[in-house]
Length: 131
Image (tube, rainbow, N blue to C red; front, top):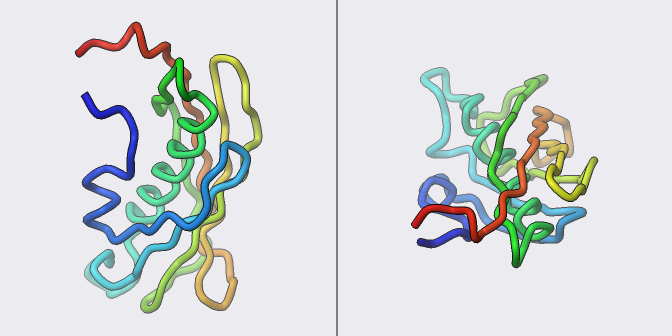
């Protein structure tokens, strides 16, 4: 069982990991190919890059004895993007023994905030996972 990595969804969406630590992670994603019918970045795409980046960072914190599993995610969208790339910057809010919380700010190429995503991950012992 593969427990870590970008994963097929992030790869299909063109998410590129630029920086990764438990405390801070950065990724970018193209708008093209991830839009809704009106031609702007889909709200779900904001959540995918945010949740993916927060989970990546939580897994850095959890490794090697635990794996992070998302238990709550929310997003507030404040602006749209219709072209170029968006950048997600993930910052740890809580790095605990059993839970992590990360805030992810997604911005456009003009550094305007598009959305804010927050994810909480439960840190589960690897030896308790089913094969």
